Length: 317
Image (cartoon, rainbow, N blue to C red; front, top):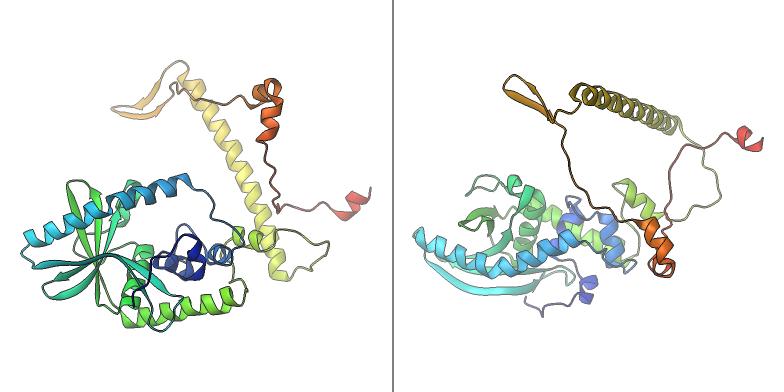
Protein backbone atom coordinates (compact mmCIF):
# COMPACT_ATOMS: atom_id res chain seq x y z
CA UNK A 1 0.00 0.00 0.00
CA UNK A 2 1.40 3.38 -0.99
CA UNK A 3 1.18 6.44 1.22
CA UNK A 4 2.20 10.08 1.07
CA UNK A 5 5.85 10.66 1.99
CA UNK A 6 6.01 11.82 5.61
CA UNK A 7 7.64 14.96 6.90
CA UNK A 8 10.44 14.89 9.47
CA UNK A 9 7.90 15.61 12.21
CA UNK A 10 5.80 12.65 11.03
CA UNK A 11 8.70 10.25 11.69
CA UNK A 12 7.48 9.99 15.28
CA UNK A 13 4.34 8.30 13.95
CA UNK A 14 5.93 5.25 12.32
CA UNK A 15 8.94 2.93 12.16
CA UNK A 16 10.86 3.20 8.88
CA UNK A 17 13.49 0.94 7.38
CA UNK A 18 16.27 3.12 8.79
CA UNK A 19 14.79 2.45 12.26
CA UNK A 20 14.93 -1.32 11.82
CA UNK A 21 18.65 -1.69 12.73
CA UNK A 22 18.08 0.27 15.96
CA UNK A 23 15.05 -1.84 16.93
CA UNK A 24 17.07 -5.01 16.29
CA UNK A 25 20.07 -3.68 18.21
CA UNK A 26 22.47 -3.76 15.23
CA UNK A 27 22.70 -0.04 14.47
CA UNK A 28 26.06 1.72 14.74
CA UNK A 29 24.27 5.00 15.42
CA UNK A 30 21.18 4.40 17.57
CA UNK A 31 20.25 2.01 20.40
CA UNK A 32 16.66 0.86 21.07
CA UNK A 33 16.51 3.22 24.07
CA UNK A 34 17.71 6.18 22.00
CA UNK A 35 15.14 5.36 19.31
CA UNK A 36 12.42 5.14 21.97
CA UNK A 37 13.37 8.61 23.22
CA UNK A 38 13.08 9.94 19.66
CA UNK A 39 9.78 8.22 18.82
CA UNK A 40 8.15 9.33 22.07
CA UNK A 41 9.30 12.93 21.54
CA UNK A 42 11.39 13.03 24.70
CA UNK A 43 14.43 14.26 22.82
CA UNK A 44 15.19 15.78 19.46
CA UNK A 45 17.79 14.17 17.20
CA UNK A 46 21.27 15.23 18.33
CA UNK A 47 23.16 17.20 15.65
CA UNK A 48 25.79 14.98 14.08
CA UNK A 49 27.66 16.83 11.35
CA UNK A 50 29.45 13.74 10.05
CA UNK A 51 26.25 11.73 9.81
CA UNK A 52 24.28 14.62 8.27
CA UNK A 53 26.94 15.12 5.62
CA UNK A 54 26.97 11.41 4.86
CA UNK A 55 23.19 11.31 4.46
CA UNK A 56 23.15 14.49 2.36
CA UNK A 57 25.88 13.11 0.09
CA UNK A 58 24.03 9.82 -0.26
CA UNK A 59 20.77 11.58 -1.16
CA UNK A 60 22.47 13.68 -3.84
CA UNK A 61 24.18 10.63 -5.32
CA UNK A 62 21.12 8.40 -5.19
CA UNK A 63 19.73 9.23 -8.70
CA UNK A 64 23.25 8.90 -10.15
CA UNK A 65 23.72 5.48 -8.51
CA UNK A 66 20.30 4.28 -9.70
CA UNK A 67 21.10 5.28 -13.29
CA UNK A 68 24.45 3.47 -13.06
CA UNK A 69 22.69 0.31 -11.87
CA UNK A 70 20.31 0.32 -14.83
CA UNK A 71 23.19 0.84 -17.29
CA UNK A 72 25.27 -1.92 -15.68
CA UNK A 73 22.42 -4.44 -15.68
CA UNK A 74 21.72 -3.75 -19.35
CA UNK A 75 25.42 -4.06 -20.18
CA UNK A 76 25.31 -7.49 -18.49
CA UNK A 77 22.51 -8.52 -20.85
CA UNK A 78 19.48 -8.12 -18.57
CA UNK A 79 16.16 -6.66 -19.67
CA UNK A 80 15.50 -3.73 -17.33
CA UNK A 81 12.54 -1.41 -16.89
CA UNK A 82 12.38 1.40 -14.33
CA UNK A 83 9.03 1.15 -12.54
CA UNK A 84 9.25 3.78 -9.79
CA UNK A 85 11.54 5.87 -7.60
CA UNK A 86 11.19 6.95 -3.98
CA UNK A 87 7.78 5.37 -3.45
CA UNK A 88 6.71 4.91 0.17
CA UNK A 89 4.77 1.86 1.35
CA UNK A 90 2.96 0.88 4.53
CA UNK A 91 2.75 -2.63 5.90
CA UNK A 92 -0.56 -4.34 5.02
CA UNK A 93 -1.08 -5.37 8.67
CA UNK A 94 0.45 -2.53 10.69
CA UNK A 95 0.12 1.11 9.64
CA UNK A 96 3.04 2.13 11.87
CA UNK A 97 5.48 0.11 9.72
CA UNK A 98 6.64 1.99 6.65
CA UNK A 99 9.45 2.02 4.10
CA UNK A 100 10.67 4.09 1.18
CA UNK A 101 12.17 2.27 -1.82
CA UNK A 102 14.88 4.20 -3.67
CA UNK A 103 14.09 2.55 -6.99
CA UNK A 104 11.95 -0.30 -8.31
CA UNK A 105 13.10 -2.23 -11.36
CA UNK A 106 11.64 -4.97 -13.52
CA UNK A 107 14.70 -7.17 -14.13
CA UNK A 108 14.03 -10.00 -16.58
CA UNK A 109 10.38 -9.91 -15.51
CA UNK A 110 11.05 -9.81 -11.74
CA UNK A 111 9.91 -6.82 -9.64
CA UNK A 112 12.98 -5.91 -7.54
CA UNK A 113 13.60 -3.29 -4.84
CA UNK A 114 16.76 -1.22 -5.29
CA UNK A 115 18.55 0.56 -2.45
CA UNK A 116 21.36 2.95 -3.40
CA UNK A 117 24.25 3.41 -0.99
CA UNK A 118 27.22 5.76 -1.23
CA UNK A 119 29.99 3.92 0.59
CA UNK A 120 33.04 5.88 1.70
CA UNK A 121 35.89 5.78 4.21
CA UNK A 122 36.24 2.74 6.45
CA UNK A 123 32.71 1.63 5.48
CA UNK A 124 34.14 0.36 2.17
CA UNK A 125 35.81 -2.53 3.97
CA UNK A 126 32.53 -3.72 5.51
CA UNK A 127 31.10 -4.75 2.14
CA UNK A 128 32.22 -8.08 0.73
CA UNK A 129 32.58 -9.45 -2.79
CA UNK A 130 30.28 -8.03 -5.44
CA UNK A 131 27.41 -10.30 -6.46
CA UNK A 132 27.09 -11.85 -2.99
CA UNK A 133 24.92 -11.10 0.05
CA UNK A 134 27.98 -10.04 2.06
CA UNK A 135 26.38 -6.78 3.21
CA UNK A 136 26.85 -4.95 6.56
CA UNK A 137 24.21 -6.21 8.98
CA UNK A 138 22.65 -2.80 9.63
CA UNK A 139 22.06 -2.28 5.91
CA UNK A 140 20.81 -5.85 5.54
CA UNK A 141 18.20 -5.11 8.22
CA UNK A 142 17.00 -2.08 6.23
CA UNK A 143 16.74 -4.06 2.99
CA UNK A 144 14.94 -6.99 4.64
CA UNK A 145 12.49 -4.52 6.20
CA UNK A 146 11.69 -3.21 2.71
CA UNK A 147 11.07 -6.75 1.47
CA UNK A 148 8.90 -7.43 4.52
CA UNK A 149 6.63 -4.47 3.81
CA UNK A 150 6.48 -4.65 0.00
CA UNK A 151 6.16 -8.44 -0.10
CA UNK A 152 8.86 -8.74 -2.77
CA UNK A 153 11.50 -11.44 -2.97
CA UNK A 154 14.75 -9.60 -3.62
CA UNK A 155 16.46 -6.27 -3.05
CA UNK A 156 19.38 -5.13 -5.17
CA UNK A 157 21.83 -3.17 -3.04
CA UNK A 158 23.84 -0.76 -5.20
CA UNK A 159 27.07 0.23 -3.44
CA UNK A 160 29.08 3.11 -4.88
CA UNK A 161 32.56 2.49 -3.50
CA UNK A 162 34.20 4.50 -6.31
CA UNK A 163 32.94 6.70 -9.13
CA UNK A 164 34.27 4.26 -11.73
CA UNK A 165 31.65 1.61 -11.10
CA UNK A 166 28.68 0.71 -8.93
CA UNK A 167 28.81 -2.71 -7.28
CA UNK A 168 25.74 -4.92 -7.09
CA UNK A 169 24.85 -6.97 -4.00
CA UNK A 170 21.69 -8.94 -3.26
CA UNK A 171 19.38 -9.36 -0.29
CA UNK A 172 17.01 -12.31 -0.69
CA UNK A 173 13.79 -12.53 1.28
CA UNK A 174 14.10 -14.91 4.23
CA UNK A 175 10.80 -15.76 5.88
CA UNK A 176 12.14 -16.82 9.33
CA UNK A 177 14.16 -13.60 9.50
CA UNK A 178 11.20 -11.49 8.43
CA UNK A 179 8.94 -13.19 10.95
CA UNK A 180 11.39 -12.42 13.73
CA UNK A 181 11.86 -8.84 12.52
CA UNK A 182 8.14 -8.22 12.34
CA UNK A 183 7.64 -9.49 15.89
CA UNK A 184 10.38 -7.21 17.22
CA UNK A 185 9.20 -4.16 15.26
CA UNK A 186 5.58 -4.63 16.34
CA UNK A 187 6.61 -5.30 19.94
CA UNK A 188 8.83 -2.21 20.01
CA UNK A 189 5.99 0.01 18.82
CA UNK A 190 3.15 -1.48 20.87
CA UNK A 191 4.99 -2.43 24.05
CA UNK A 192 7.32 0.56 24.25
CA UNK A 193 6.22 3.51 22.09
CA UNK A 194 2.45 3.21 22.55
CA UNK A 195 2.65 2.11 26.20
CA UNK A 196 5.43 4.63 26.87
CA UNK A 197 7.67 2.02 28.50
CA UNK A 198 11.39 2.06 27.64
CA UNK A 199 13.07 -1.01 26.15
CA UNK A 200 15.92 -2.71 27.98
CA UNK A 201 19.18 -0.70 27.89
CA UNK A 202 22.14 -2.20 26.01
CA UNK A 203 24.92 0.22 27.00
CA UNK A 204 25.94 2.57 29.82
CA UNK A 205 24.67 5.69 28.03
CA UNK A 206 21.20 4.09 27.82
CA UNK A 207 21.03 3.63 31.59
CA UNK A 208 22.20 7.19 32.18
CA UNK A 209 19.55 8.47 29.74
CA UNK A 210 16.80 6.48 31.47
CA UNK A 211 17.83 7.66 34.96
CA UNK A 212 19.31 11.15 34.48
CA UNK A 213 18.64 12.33 38.07
CA UNK A 214 19.76 10.34 41.13
CA UNK A 215 17.47 9.86 44.14
CA UNK A 216 18.85 10.04 47.71
CA UNK A 217 18.40 6.32 48.31
CA UNK A 218 20.76 3.42 48.93
CA UNK A 219 20.72 0.06 47.14
CA UNK A 220 22.40 -2.99 48.62
CA UNK A 221 24.91 -4.72 46.34
CA UNK A 222 24.56 -8.42 45.60
CA UNK A 223 27.65 -10.64 45.61
CA UNK A 224 27.83 -10.43 41.82
CA UNK A 225 27.60 -6.62 41.87
CA UNK A 226 30.35 -6.44 44.51
CA UNK A 227 32.56 -8.49 42.20
CA UNK A 228 31.81 -6.06 39.37
CA UNK A 229 32.88 -3.16 41.60
CA UNK A 230 36.14 -4.93 42.44
CA UNK A 231 36.82 -5.70 38.78
CA UNK A 232 36.16 -2.08 37.81
CA UNK A 233 38.67 -0.91 40.42
CA UNK A 234 41.23 -3.41 39.14
CA UNK A 235 40.76 -2.18 35.57
CA UNK A 236 41.25 1.43 36.72
CA UNK A 237 44.50 0.42 38.44
CA UNK A 238 45.70 -1.41 35.33
CA UNK A 239 44.87 1.56 33.12
CA UNK A 240 46.86 3.87 35.39
CA UNK A 241 49.80 1.45 35.39
CA UNK A 242 49.69 1.19 31.60
CA UNK A 243 49.55 4.99 31.25
CA UNK A 244 52.58 5.33 33.54
CA UNK A 245 54.43 2.67 31.55
CA UNK A 246 53.50 4.44 28.30
CA UNK A 247 54.92 7.74 29.61
CA UNK A 248 58.14 6.00 30.71
CA UNK A 249 58.61 4.30 27.33
CA UNK A 250 58.03 7.56 25.46
CA UNK A 251 60.61 9.25 27.70
CA UNK A 252 63.19 6.52 27.04
CA UNK A 253 62.61 6.60 23.28
CA UNK A 254 62.66 10.40 23.06
CA UNK A 255 65.87 10.56 25.14
CA UNK A 256 67.50 8.01 22.84
CA UNK A 257 66.42 9.81 19.65
CA UNK A 258 67.36 13.28 20.82
CA UNK A 259 67.29 15.61 17.80
CA UNK A 260 66.82 12.74 15.30
CA UNK A 261 63.50 12.71 13.49
CA UNK A 262 63.41 8.99 12.61
CA UNK A 263 64.19 5.82 14.55
CA UNK A 264 65.11 2.87 12.34
CA UNK A 265 66.18 -0.76 12.51
CA UNK A 266 68.16 -1.52 9.37
CA UNK A 267 66.00 -0.77 6.32
CA UNK A 268 62.82 -0.48 8.38
CA UNK A 269 61.66 2.77 10.01
CA UNK A 270 60.19 2.24 13.49
CA UNK A 271 59.16 5.67 14.77
CA UNK A 272 59.17 9.30 13.70
CA UNK A 273 59.41 12.28 16.05
CA UNK A 274 58.55 15.30 13.96
CA UNK A 275 56.72 18.60 14.13
CA UNK A 276 52.95 18.75 13.82
CA UNK A 277 51.14 22.08 13.90
CA UNK A 278 47.87 22.12 15.81
CA UNK A 279 45.43 25.00 16.01
CA UNK A 280 44.07 25.58 19.50
CA UNK A 281 41.40 28.02 20.57
CA UNK A 282 42.57 30.22 23.47
CA UNK A 283 39.41 29.92 25.55
CA UNK A 284 40.79 31.66 28.65
CA UNK A 285 42.09 34.56 26.58
CA UNK A 286 38.73 34.89 24.86
CA UNK A 287 36.96 34.92 28.24
CA UNK A 288 39.24 37.69 29.51
CA UNK A 289 38.72 39.91 26.48
CA UNK A 290 35.09 39.04 25.67
CA UNK A 291 33.44 37.95 28.91
CA UNK A 292 29.94 38.84 27.68
CA UNK A 293 30.29 36.78 24.51
CA UNK A 294 31.76 33.85 26.41
CA UNK A 295 28.86 33.88 28.87
CA UNK A 296 26.38 33.99 25.98
CA UNK A 297 27.72 30.74 24.55
CA UNK A 298 28.40 28.98 27.83
CA UNK A 299 26.48 25.71 28.12
CA UNK A 300 26.07 23.74 31.34
CA UNK A 301 25.46 20.01 31.13
CA UNK A 302 24.17 17.89 34.00
CA UNK A 303 25.56 14.36 33.71
CA UNK A 304 25.52 11.54 36.23
CA UNK A 305 29.04 10.30 36.97
CA UNK A 306 29.77 6.79 38.22
CA UNK A 307 32.81 6.90 40.53
CA UNK A 308 34.22 5.20 43.60
CA UNK A 309 32.41 6.30 46.78
CA UNK A 310 34.20 7.79 49.76
CA UNK A 311 34.10 5.71 52.93
CA UNK A 312 31.28 6.89 55.21
CA UNK A 313 33.55 6.92 58.24
CA UNK A 314 36.06 9.08 56.35
CA UNK A 315 33.29 11.48 55.36
CA UNK A 316 32.14 11.74 58.96
CA UNK A 317 35.60 12.89 60.08
